[in-house]
Length: 88
Image 1 (tube, one colour):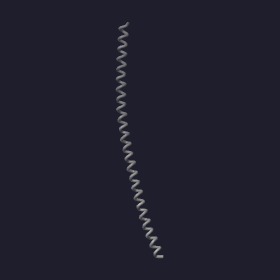
Image 2 (cartoon, helix red, strand yellow):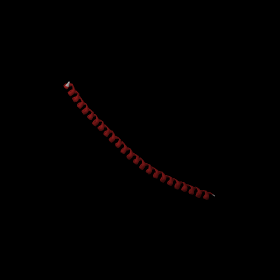
Image 3 (cartoon, rainbow, N blue to C red):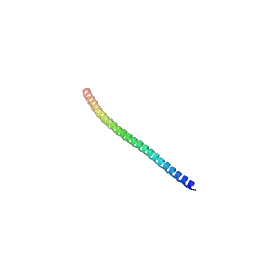
Image 4 (tube, rainbow, N blue to C red):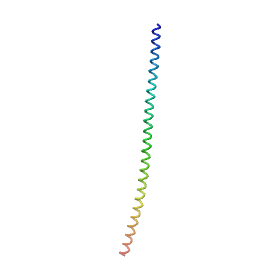
């Protein structure tokens, strides 16, 4: 009987040790996942800011192109008017 009780206690200790390893393993896996998601978050934020910067550059180029187009339209209109006046 004592032998059985002793074996049960040994088994209980081994099981507790196994449980502690499992907790450590799960904790390590969680930390790896957490680091991975933090890395993804940083990467997404960086990419988002890059896209915002590109959008600003695009908007500036678009605004400049529109201004140039208006100037060219005004110049063409002025030339048309001058030509029309000469013809009359």
